Amino acid sequence: MAVFISVVNHNHDEMIVSDNTLKELSKQYSVVLKSNTQPTLELTAYCNDAGIHLLTSNQPKGFGANNNEIFEFTKKKLDMKTEDYFLALNPDVIIDNQSLNQLVKLADTHQSDISAINLYRNKEKTEFDNSIRRQHSLLNPLRGLLGVLRKDIYDKSTIKEPVRIDWAAGSFLLFRAETYEELGGFDERYFMYFEDADICKRAIQKGKNVMYFPQIEAIHLAQHDNRKIFSKNFFWYTISLIKFYCNP
Image (cartoon, rainbow, N blue to C red; front, side):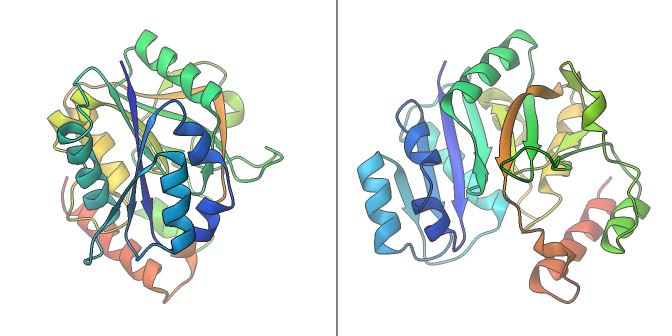
């Protein structure tokens, strides 16, 4: 049973190169980095030195499409099996090998098809990243955009044991390869945002387990650009929001 790590880069070259996360993970796991933008010489050298598979293309793709491309690459070129694990990992997430090892064991023990972990928004681990959610009504995302308290966020401080959840952010999602294949991967109609909510919803509809493991911790240095009204990210967020609620 192996783990294959999928990372999508979009102008995160400096962030990736300045951190040892992917370099350390690549010592134990197969790491595939798809650069949605032209990689710098520094990033190319970083990948070469670490044995990271660097994929590039002339046409930028959405988050889901890039992860789907990496999934096909791991199957065809790296011989990923159905019993293996496929991790969608943001380049701004910091996690160590020991934590990932523990997660894989827990996912196997609890027969988790899609696994999420306890992400924090700072290195001091004093601020939770609201990365696990309940299935929500349209009103909750609108509350978030307006800066009003959302009602679909799990209170991580009260969760001490592994638990089933409705969905988790795509910044860190560990899939059974068999499950990802059965679901057809991410829905590529979403360029960015809500593809994580969609794939978890489809998994649950098929009787799969989507689980949160609070004892596994990592750092997510997110920018949350979708909250900047009239930005490009805000536009993508709004379009994905509409697609999600028009596709029950």
